[in-house]
Length: 254
Image 1 (cartoon, rainbow, N blue to C red):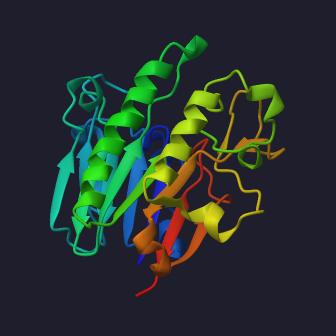
Image 2 (image 1 turned 30 degrees about the vertical axis):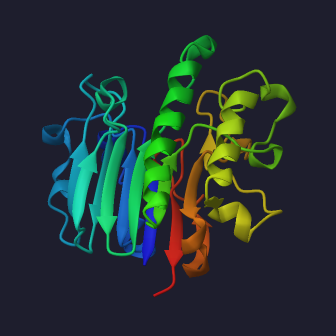
């Protein structure tokens, strides 16, 4: 099974750029999308009526902002949205998809905002999601969290760590939350498989950073430790254009 995540930074713009042509090559079984910036009625028909995928769309109440979606081939047992906290759920940041062997969370974590004003909101989101994941683990259930974490965990995960220590996305208190998830039974699948590999998934449009590969690794798969024996690979598709992020895939053994 292949699960792919992608922050599209506007689903309509990506479709207009023919940004989903890679689907025929990568062939994910499940595709989680973040920052769709559209209501379901605004989603292009290409995705709503895709011949190979069913889809579920979770939009923010605020137009043109945030939002998540999941496209899937295998039928899930259930789909739920939100974290049962209104301040987060109105922004359309969370979809939970249940399969027999795991629960998949497709997440668009908050950004710390201009001047780091939204960092407390962001850290509260991390805390609330972890509460729910702890409950899964207490019941013996396995979890995959994927999406745009809006945090680079360690210095290897961004091109300019020294210059970003006071910027959201690499603040100590943000990075500490990734540590906390790892202490609560999760494994960063990419870093576990490739401990010394430099791979980025986001590049700043404003500074034309992508041609120079001055990037950050912000898009993750955190996997319950009990599921790691089934993880075969994590693939960063940094040749896929259309967004300031690129897709990332988790490959599970059959």
